[in-house]
Amino acid sequence: MFRVDQRFVGQGLWNTSALPMSLQAAMGLAKNRSQSQFADDVRIVPSEIRAIDLRV
Image (cartoon, rainbow, N blue to C red; front, side, top):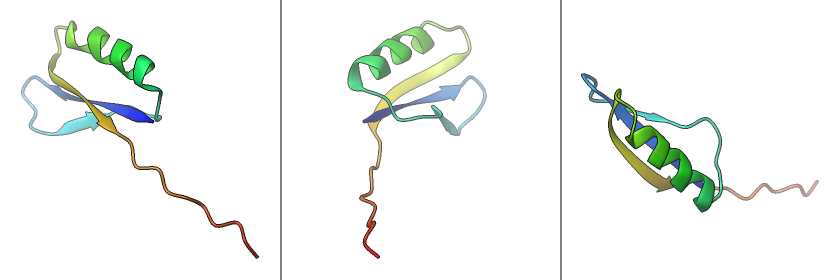
């Protein structure tokens, strides 16, 4: 799973997408946001997935 981070013009902080998504969806979203007039920089980052221990 991946997420899309973007940095807006005039800000030094990276904003992340809300939910993890597949690589294909992340590439489409990154392409769409990179063509936006507001996004300064866009990157695709692997999201951190942690295993959940359901043992009682």
